[in-house]
Length: 524
Image (cartoon, rainbow, N blue to C red; front, top):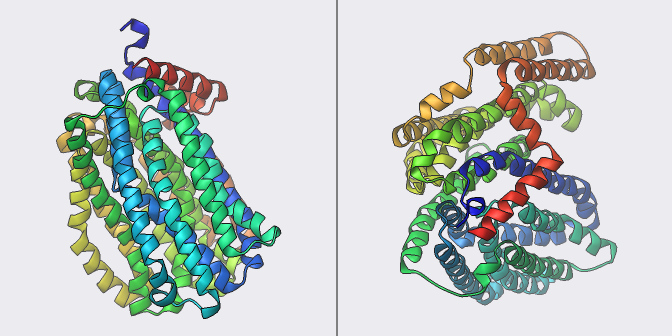
């Protein structure tokens, strides 16, 4: 193996910024497609028909969880093979992941197909006039499931070799099609089953596109099919712990709504769900950073992690905290004005405090994703699963007490306290399991930045207490936000940070980084 093709950890560490930009732009594009297409879709379908469509979209989203954590395990294993320059092991991971996820997808599709009559007739309250359409819908969903699960394997491979350019080239149109195809179907007067049929076809095309991407990025793995017993044990062990995480996280994010419905009333759900949807939009930023960081950490060998801790641990926390933090503070300060302008004064009076509390939880939770990423990349997915299991009694106790006494405000407090507890455990675990992690955090984040952020937050809330119109409140908050960003850029971000951010946003650098990663992966 010549010097050019040897694994280069510095190159891989520096590339995650460009990949995070690709992920962020892609997710923003999908979000914009949803914002533009959803209103005419809702207007174009009557209530029951839209209910069937939303049921199908939920089924597509849930089908992605049927990979039982193998997609994440594949990314980790592939990145580790690249880092160790193990060509045979990489091929074994690729083919074993495809085999396992094909079996899972076919089994799940069979169960859904056979259950379709019961789902359409008795399990769900579907009007008699739509039951035939619902039966056809569930059978179409069953046909899509193997392709959705299999796509997870191919995407996991591409993410493992850090080819996020190819991932987003497929994922962005595929995710946007969830909004674009139904709208096109309405314009062409298609029924709901036909619209769902086009969505199923898009999943088939998406899987084929991922195959082409893998063949372009790793042509050598298609030359010979091979399996290794050690690879099987590794993937199953990692995916087992990851599947526990994948099961528990949706419980935490959805169960609060059932507590509200049972203790407060279904009518209160709207005043909680809308602020929570705002949070989902803001999670795009930390998600983009962490998803691009995970294969970098996974690809580092044990002796390579500590020298790069500031880059892969301290700085990502810094970037999330000082980009998302000011935005969250501003939104919290003008939450009453935004909600009053968007949904009316009654809605603002009931949901403003909820949104403010949830925004605090958003920042805490997002920062906690970085130590979780470090632990998962170090092949310790068991730690995250155990932390989430340990939270269960804390969560149920908090939810019962706070929601029963404070309603939807109590639900928001439950979320924020839970994620603070979870984030604290992640930091403690990362400090204990990775020597030097605490020092990397101190080195990356200057102490002077914390009082500056606190002062900014106090000023933002103080300005909103002054009399003035909604326009004045929002405009003053934007000016304050711009000033805070300027201060952080000048006095908190050092020269390395500024260079890293500029290169991450450079189109030329993104193209160059993906070219170097492509050459390294093909030479592995």
